[in-house]
Structure formats: structure tokens, C-alpha cells
Length: 73
Length: 231
Image (tube, rainbow over all chains, first blue to last red):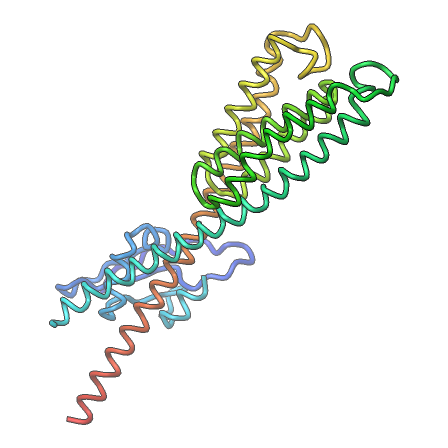
């Protein structure tokens, strides 16, 4: 189980879809990213785990539907 | 095709489509702003002629109303300044050269209007308004071109013909630096806002790519489940 990074502060009045993303690699090890760190990954490194169903999105420690998380801005 | 091959191929296609969407969005932005400036260039030409006709005699010769030499300057020089950017905006919208020509011409329009108004300080506001409109491109290089032109103009005319740019014959030699400082001050914020806006455009394209990846994953998982149930 990955150690969750501290969530980033919520923007005043802003809508967040997620604050942490956990990606499981090929060997089963999970790596956690803050939203900022995740968004700085190359796009291909975000798309590939989504295609393989290896990404989980969290908001305030609760897992959220990836579609809702991404659309939620 | 193995699953790994499919994932690699799908990743490449989705990333490429995201890049194409972003590029299309930027191109539409460039073309739209080019068209906006085509109208603005035409409007400025008309405005310059009106300023030359109604204001220049007061600005430059006291309250004697004649058909001033500046009317011809506004018609001919203004026409020259507007015609190239209008032609490029209509014939080559979205081309990088077009927006740099527009930026340079827009700043030269500021210079001409400042001259026509006798170096009136209020006409210098045209520079800042122009930088704000040029920021619509969200391309800092365009703002760099504009800034270079306006600072070079102030420096050269400040030395050669100070009355034309400051309305007085003996300004301090460093006055252009004061004007340049405020231009750079505005520029810093415009560049920051432009980069932020560009990042938001990238995020929209990337969000679309990620949703596409999710849809592909869902479709593939559903297909496998259906095949398993059927088998």
C-alpha cells in the first residue's frame, strides 16, 4: 500500500476532481502523486496506466471515479 | 496483436490526437486574433486620418485650421503601416510571421498616433492598449517584438525628434527608459497570464486524452467480459 502524499490545499471556491493519484506499476508497486506532480508527468505516462486500468484517483482520501475526477478539473 | 502492443499503439494515437487538438486550438486562436487585427488596422487608419485632420493643426501649429501635412502622412504612412498586416491576416492567417508583422505594425501605429497628436502623453496609452490586445495571441515572442519596436522608436525619436514623441524639445535623455520601464512592467504580467492561459489549453487537451484512454479501457474490459460470458 502506498503512503499517501499530503493533499494540496483546496483552492478557495475552486472545484477539484482529485488531489492524489496512485499508479500501480508492472511489478505491482503503487506510487502516489500529488495532483501537481501527476500533471507534470508526460502525457503518455498518464494515458498508458489509464488504458491498463492501473490508475486510482483520490479526493480527500476517498477514491473517486476516474471519469468524474478528470472532468472535475 | 498482444495487449502490450495494443496499449503502446493506443497510447501513441491518443497522445498524438491530444497534440493535434491543442495545435488546432492554438491555430484557431492565432487566426482569430489575426482577423481581429485586420479590422483594427483598418479602423486605426481611419482614426489616424481623423486625428490628423482635426487634431494635428492644434497640436503642431496652434489653432489654425488648414489641411495639414499630417493628413497626407496619415493617409500614406498609415496606409503603408496597415496594408501589410491586413494582407497577411487575410492571406496567411495563423502564420508566425503574420503575428510578428502585426505586432511591429501595431507599435508603429502607436508611434504615428503619438506623432500626430504632437507627442501628447495620453496617446501613449495606445501602446499599453495594444500590448493588451497583442496578448490575445498568448505568445510571448509577439509581445517581445512589440516591446522591441516601441522601445527602439522611443529611443530613436527621443534623440532625433523629441517633440514628436514627448511633445517637448528638450526631454531628459533617459526619458525613454522611464517609458520602457512601464512597458516592461505591463509585459511581465501579460506574459505570465499568457503562459497560464496556454497551460490551461494544454490541460484541456490532456484531460480529453485521459478521458479517451478511460473510454478505451472500459470498452476493452467490457468486450473481454462479454467474450468470456459468451464462451
